[in-house]
Length: 117
Image (cartoon, rainbow, N blue to C red; front, side, top):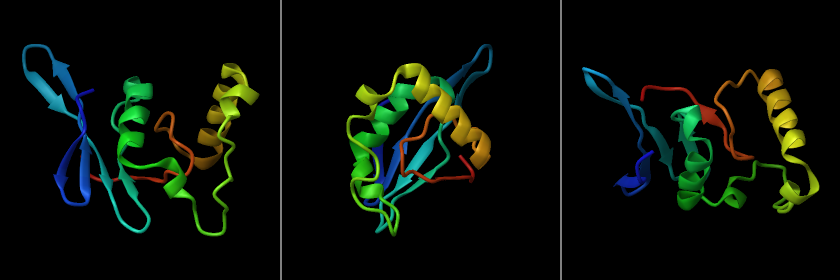
């Protein structure tokens, strides 16, 4: 994954270039639109995992993504200390199955939207 960059005042790009041997590269980008409620368009490649989350949180503070009707403490800051990695993976898999998401690991509060890359 390449470094994120700002494409316009309220638009950030999280770029990834997938090598295609003998052809070149296929750009696969995710976009963050900053607004009263920030929007994540697409989620890039699942193989980026932690790099994607790091890049995303460098643009948007997850605490700013609290949905209406929820308090700022909806997700404990130390859940990684309270749950094992296996428990987090199990919870993530359950949420993906029940929400219909197949986008990989999403930061709590982000609502992926589909659209062109």
